[in-house]
Image (tube, rainbow, N blue to C red; front, side, top):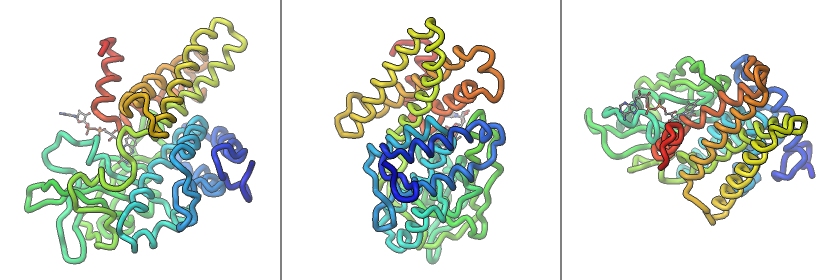
Length: 366
Ligand SMILES: Cc1cc2nc3c(=O)[nH]c(=O)nc-3n(C[C@H](O)[C@H](O)[C@H](O)COP(=O)(O)OP(=O)(O)OC[C@H]3O[C@@H](n4cnc5c(N)ncnc54)[C@H](O)[C@@H]3O)c2cc1C
């Protein structure tokens, strides 16, 4: 079933497969150019993808979490970069939607849902990045009418294309950090805001991820999403670290690699064993993901993420092995999938998950 004018109304909608076909066809040139996926994001808008995440009050379809993750699973098998950008956009939108700042919600959410505005997040320095440093990389001080933000957010996807970046900052008292943090939706046209050059990455360079600098930027109270409060990341909804969304994208990429392996195995009986074993593992891990979404977890969220990481690394390398030398030539998807799978070792990866993945790589049984 397809919604009006190609708008996707459920993860079973034929229009989702149509969108995935278009994204998949663009994935290879996107990787080669490293250009921002503007056309892909336009297509997502045309197919109503931005409506999945928002409430009807803002023009959204308010999909439940299971449907959103089924959507992400399909999209990430087609184009990981575009889907990753969507998750960062979704993270910003959810933070804004769960804010008690009604004026901010009214100002931004309808435009975000229509795809007229683009927002992203710079919050990892409160969770998984730069945590060993004594001075917070992004600091906030109270000022008349708001807060002055000073420093930078080290990793912001699509900052150079964003209208708003939802950043986390630590409240300072004098030169000392306090335990209080805030989130602000910073308009990228404020004086003192500066996007660093996007990093050239091992994969996903087209996500245009780079540092986002704030040089004494006065951010008015009207832009505050949450806080100052302790552990601002655990208040409200949004992109938690190591959450089910990150595992979903890993499984989506694993699914693409396995589809390739299965296709090769149809003509090459020696590939049947690995195909069957990996397919069974993918099915079991996907089942556990959706059990967790339904509130009946078979394992912890961290364990699920660790299994998804392990699977995507092995499945993509199995696809490369099956593709042989041809897969090692730039432009073959198997090589790209291997590079993209490495991303899951570093993206929003909680310490426990990283430790478990490293033990597996080291051949140490936990
Ligand atoms: C492609 C990409 C896109 C991303 N997009 C976003 C985004 O849109 N928004 C967002 O908020 N985040 C984003 N992230 C951040 C991501 O979720 C992680 O937070 C990030 O990958 C953590 O890596 P780091 O190098 O900052 O970690 P760090 O912990 O800061 O490590 C950096 C370096 O510090 C040293 N180090 C680390 N720990 C210690 C220690 N305990 N003692 C001494 N030295 C140490 C090591 O040499 C290490 O290489 C993105 C990351 C990537 C790679």
